[in-house]
Length: 155
Image 1 (spheres, rainbow, N blue to C red):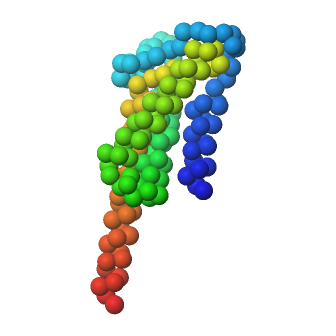
Image 2: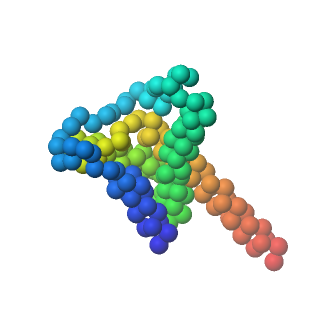
């Protein structure tokens, strides 16, 4: 049940949080960034923003994108044994992130959203989140397995 709620929350945050643009229903040219970390630092000139604002923006972008798919890296191997493979889990994470970015692009193209761009940074950071989630699973899984082994050998 927690996994279903998590999936619905991801969809809500990434797709349905998009606000209709002023030209609602009109197609436009969506923003796409395929150069890693170029957009993240664009316009961060000391004369344009305060240093505190720039740091908060970077933190929210980095942390938010990492945390978005971190639970996926934990849930997949926990719920399905075939995802106990690092490669499979990370592949599903990358495909999930690419799917989100593609849907955001299509919605922007159709004029159904504004303020969002399809960005390679999001895919990279989401993938890092999946990897961290998988590592958390491994630590917990190994801990439980070692505890079971220890407790059964002490009987």
